[in-house]
Image (cartoon, rainbow, N blue to C red; front, side, top):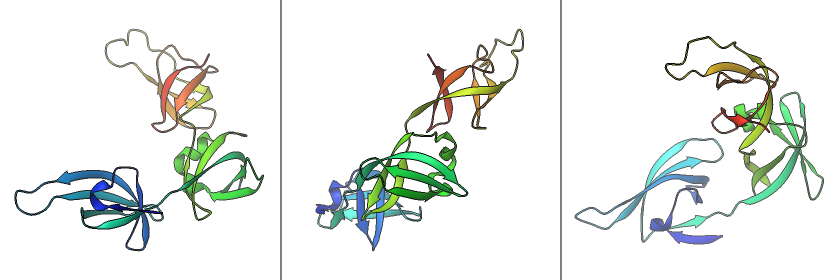
Length: 188
C-alpha cells in the first residue's frame, strides 16, 4: 500500500481513514489568503455508505488502498442471494441482493461482472454499462402527440419500466443503460 500526501487525493481514490475504507467522491483544492492550502475531500464509506467531508493538508499522509478487481460470471438467484462464479478458480461467491441494489434486475445467466475485493472481501460490483432486453408491454402511440417529448412508458422482460420513443412496440429488443436505467437505442 502506498502513502500519499493529502493534496494528492483525487476522485475515485480509495483511502484508509479513521480505521475505515473510504472512496473520494469530490475533491476541491482550497488556497486561502492566509495560511496553507488544503484539499477539501468528500468521502464515502465503502462498507456502510456514510459520507464525510474532510480537510487534508499537504503535510498529512494517508494510506491509498489498491482494490483487487476480479471477473465473475452470474450463475443464478437463490432466495435473497445472488450466486457468482470466479472465472479463473471456479469458486462460487454469494452476494446479498441489496449489495447489488436495484440493478440486480439486469443480471442475466452467464453475464460477466467485475467485483471489487479488499482482502478477499467483496466491497463493490460493476455490471456491464448496457444490456439488451425485450419489451413485453408498450403503450400504443397517441396520434398527433408530436409537440413535446413524446416518449411513452414500456415494461421490459425483467419487470423494469423505461421510457421509449413512440416507434418502439412490444416484442422489440432494445439496449438499456444499466446505470441510468434509460433507453439507449434499438438492438440490431
